[in-house]
Length: 307
Image (cartoon, rainbow, N blue to C red; front, top):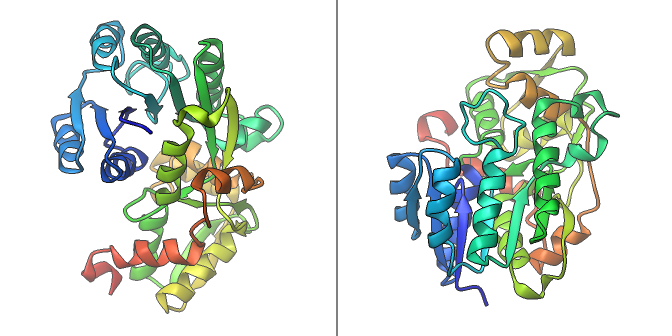
């Protein structure tokens, strides 16, 4: 049974759900964050925050003593030393954390990668700095010799996430939704609650040697059909309008495409899906349905926007 885990990026969308879930299971949580706001959030969710300026060598030395009693570590942050680093694909930050894990004797690590990494160099939408950084992280992890699980998620959905929730807000405000291209590209979202359950299970000592898990949900759906499904859950009519992919990317580079940066738009268009069997095994039960996750996210929107 897990007694204590560390989470790098504990105040992010996935990280904060991990903190809350682990604490609810009686697991002590060390939440590594960069800001006072992040530290306060971790504490409010039942974890003990560890504020750091970045993931440089000084932080590595501080982590070594903090990690000694940890049964596992979850890495949800970018691989670079700092979000302001010039080369976001340089895994120096992750390498410092892994060295601290080795020194402290942390037995297991979970790293969040991305589903499109398998087709880097083959699928143009997967051939981006975002997936290159994830690839660098995976290589660093497997070279470390630590027992590791790499999660390659599609989209992770839940209340107040960075994709589904803003999309729901747009649909709450307008019955006309613009999408890039024909919308036939597919996603396979998994709920953040299932993600938290799978992550803790992956840290258990009986989970075996290093492996890669496609962290995907129970349903494959096109983006166009996702919009229609959301409209049904919200009980609102919707009209889909199409923008060419080239125009959408131009807008993403200039000012953001409805909040999406070029790398975010590329992830949406990459059309990556997988077998959910491994995720279902880690969750040890039925994966949450897409309709359920949409409904939960919709219910948490501010009344003025959702109702």
